[in-house]
Image (cartoon, rainbow, N blue to C red; front, side):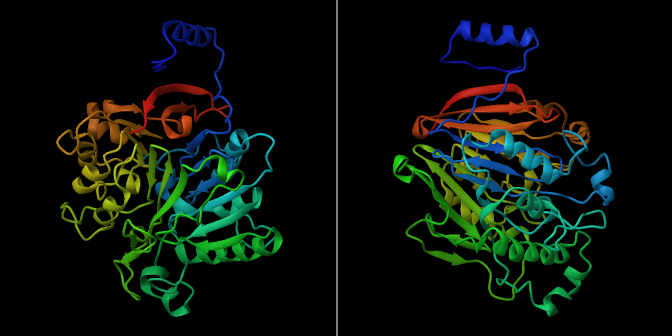
Length: 424
């Protein structure tokens, strides 16, 4: 158990330790108005982050659900489904949301944001999936949204830089031979959106780059004027950093792959800043810094932040030196599911005091044995290598704690607490 009660004193540590010795499990204290909670949920099947805004507005970022029919999913190269196989990954996401949803609030998600259309972010159909009453297969965000109503679903759209609903586009080799079924899954996704819009009034929008009025406080906006969410990037369109203007990296008809089209947002709460950006990258195929890639373009628009998730799970093509030096977070959070994450060179860049001075703490939802075998002792720089990771921000954004919750237990008790950190 790693606990740092800088403000609570010696006796608080003794009290907390005594409870652990007695075997009593400590639960995360309930959310309270004024708290910003960011839960990075580990299911072993992809990204999912549940966010509770200071006024109780809720948002889910991604709902990864890789198919159990792929050899990579069931191999030792990839993580196991956790906490157990009694539920699907989306069902576990909803179970988690139900546990930490603010009390006395309507059971719903005010927002869901899908960063891009890959299986570990929005789901994947296969022969094992069940069919919902709406005629769509249950996977990823489709199963989450069937189990708990979503008021507004934001994605990257489908028309730019290529029209994914165009039958000629869908027939192209790059999509027809896609082993992970992006187009077939998208067709189920569109069925889901159509059905849920008629059934519960779901609103579906593409992320509006440059805007800070698309994802807003729904319950008490006047109570927290220092809270906002800035849309940074989508479809290779990058916010300039002023008003709501942006510029485009790609032209109509130019498809660079799905990862560079990821949606990216920055959450601001007083002094506190948090960034998450899907699977963008900044290192080219030769291992060199790619100044034409998304990371190099979004970094100046993001600016320095307190907490950032690793782009592309910490894959070798991510966290280029310019990006790391520019956003220089105090805390890095890695959402991953495979032994390929992180690349050792990514770890070197994240921890380099040459790129930016000062302390930085790193947390990961899982670290597989294959990664440990290759990287070895350098992974000791991580504060935690397994569990749900919760960022809880207090005092109108002045300070925050990091909790690690047990992802092997349905109770999700506290395994460790770090902080308090002072927002910068």
